[in-house]
Amino acid sequence: MEYLLNSTIIALEKGDITKSDLDCIVNAANTSLLGGGGVDGAIHRAGGREILDECIRIRNKQGNCPVGESVITTGGRLKAKFVIHTVGPVWNGGNNLEDEKLGNCYKNSLNLAVQYGLKSISFPNISTGIYKFPKDKAAAIAIRTVLDFVLQNESFKKIQFICFDDENYNIYQEKLRAVL
Image 1 (cartoon, rainbow, N blue to C red):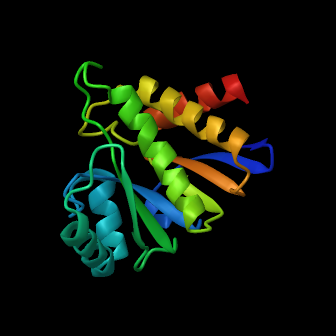
Image 2 (cartoon, rainbow, N blue to C red):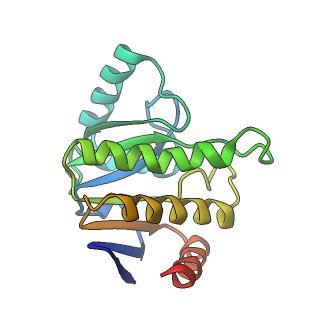
């Protein structure tokens, strides 16, 4: 499923983000940047030790990655040349600025990709797994943030949402159809 907004393709796909061949993929990381479960673990396993080594170097230089912030590493053995690691918020009933922090994950990842001259990027469903962010709400924030960015910035040829499960895919499909 693809839409054109300005000169950017907005795409939706169901599948495994580690198989993406776009310039970079986004990792829903934890603050330690040392890998974990879910998409984070899958990216580290598929990309190999080189990604972890760069994450360790970043951590040694700056400490943990704060929620809402993003850092970039090589893609290691992945098809994508780069991985942008962003730390999503843990859902706390909406009482801890979770919406704003999740939006910052997308904004900061997009800005970092632009800074590196990247033209395509794949996003997973940030914070909707173990961090328990409501999927419907997370999708609305992701889509709104990405579309607002594209309306202000024509740097990307393609921005893709890759959903691992049917539930997220159906939510994104419905929300994208409603706005594009």
